[in-house]
Amino acid sequence: MTDTTISPPAPPKTDQRQSTKVAFASLIGTTVEWYDFYIYGTAAALVFPQLFFPNFSPAAGLLASLSTYAVGFAARPLGGAVFGHYGDRVGRKKMLVISLLAMGLATLAMGLVPGFAQIGILAPIIIVALRFVQGVAVGGEWGGAVLMAVEHAPPGKRGFYGSWPQIGSPLGLVLSTAAFSAVGFLDDEAFLSWGWRVPFLLSSVLIIVGLVVRLRLMESPVFAQLEASGNTARMPVKEAITGHTRSILSAAGAFIIINTVFYLVTVLGLSWATTHLGIPRGTFLGAVLVAAVVMCFTVPLFGALSDRVGRRPVFAAGALLVGLFAFPLFAMIESGSTPLLFLGIIVIMGLGHPLMYGPQAALYAEMFPPEVRYSGASLGYQIGGMLGGLVPLVASALLVTYDNASWPMAALLAVIALISLGSLLTIRARYSDESVRA
Image: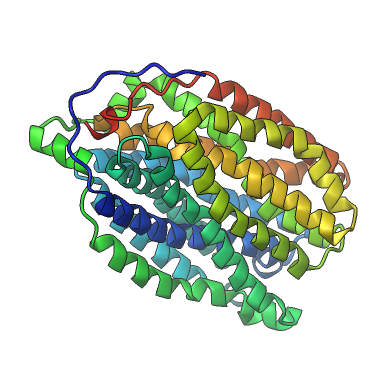
């Protein structure tokens, strides 16, 4: 899997301390964003069916709740397009600050929304609107965060430095799972009345931390050079779509499996295991929490590995592992054995997912020229994210159709792994080490 590269002009010199500072700041910011995004998923599985859709049957309530959850994914390509356009026009840093504020305020508001019993149909309408804002914000977040890290990275270390903001995803999951685990031991009445709101309200603290860190960042040297030379694109999104259609579609297709793994386990898997199999809520959340901690180490490990052996071979290994492990995963969960439950979730999320997620940032940055990179990478990522994020909704419908059998979920996971692997094979990362900084 060799890549064709374009010879670039000489890059500006790098400052490794600055590279590390930017990568760390990107990590902090993405952690806050993903914490906010993930607590909604946990609440959608555990709380919202009863709180916002109380007149539905349990299965229909879950389906309705996951439909509101899916709104966030439907909004992500819009966020990628809007923030990508301005990120390529006015700079990466400004967009990161705006996306963090939008996400944080929407999440904080969610923690204050009364339930259906208090304000009726207005309650789920408000939740859907706020979820849409979350989706737009996270749609604009990823491209700017990873480009700041990749475009500041020393030559030959883009995979490693680009993986730092990627760690924000599992770290956000650790924090969100820990927050819900802390209130998960409340009795059902306390948990449904006020306990679930605590993780949402805690977001206000994280917003302040994230803003302080991001406001101190220097702009990407790549964008600064583009702006100084007057070579910024006039209509970046349009130019990305018309000039790099294949790359956007390939990036989207490859990413579907990453989101599918993550949300099929952490959202639908959580609901299915606790309601159908009777697995204690704390046990399943504990397994997810351990897997997320493992991911915090394996994501940068596989990002660094991609600097040595290439992005696509590492990514492909992850897609193959997920496809082959799909049926064993659900069999291990259904076994009722806590050690097998932990092992299955750790393998799929602690190894399979990071093999793909670790090299992804550098791979996608290398697919697009600097003047449309924010737009192109964001659109590819967010379109794939939208499709992958809708999988729990599809899988929940399959559960209803097939009486909670696990094999349709396993088959769906395996098929999507093959689709993403095929998309990966069409990717050509054309922009070499130096051109990322040129």
